[in-house]
Length: 299
Image (cartoon, rainbow, N blue to C red; front, side, top):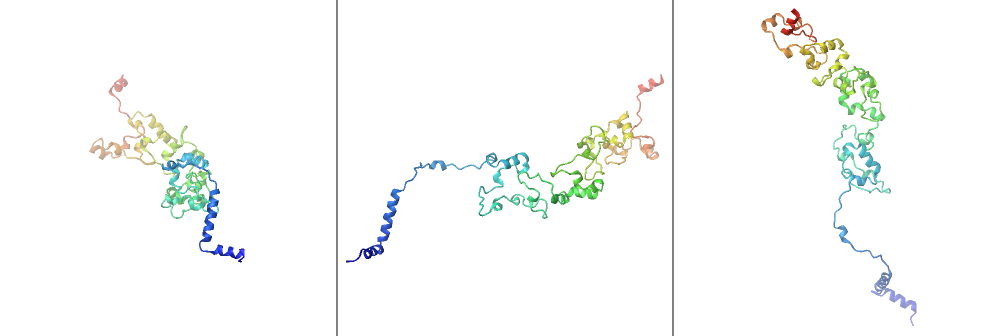
């Protein structure tokens, strides 16, 4: 009589018998497993979700939303315009730099030239792009970005050229425009910083400019007190004309013919070509008196 061990071995390795035993075991196990009954609701997936609004992103990203809200400037647009991948950071992969937006995605060419391609060196917070802290690196490269201002300081040397940028722009925040009155006294009482800029460009301050009728005449008296006093009291028509109407450039002595042409005829103009030989002071011209005034004087 064969032993029980031999019979068991034959059963175990008989064709198909092992597979049948496994199937029976699995079915027995499945019958005993319990599952939670959750209603099947496919209607929940019929709609396509709309992208989150910035204010919804801000519910979690409070600091970033506040930055954009207060000082976002041109970066105040939908978050998805920069952030194409969300919540994909994996500390094991250390993929933070990979999923963060790149400035070059929008700024196709380097705004400050090929020398400055590491934007975050100066623009440390992309949510406040114009809030640039003044670092040693930034201070050493003012002229590379502000080329127009640097060219003016070089081409039109003045005391401002010798002082350097930080003498005036001495705050810790880039882009702050200082007032002239930090160093200079006003020309006249009540003068504003905006008044200064109508005549002076701080990067070429000695090149005084005018803006026609918009130039405030009372500022001229600070340097030209005598002429201003005559002009402001003259009864002639010149007293109604803005200084910058005749003096198109600072220091320019205008020709009378610019406005008057040749009013006295060719013979007189040939004999007396210089108007000021007769009209002695253009700031206080003589006024032709009325006939009534002359009669009153004779009495």
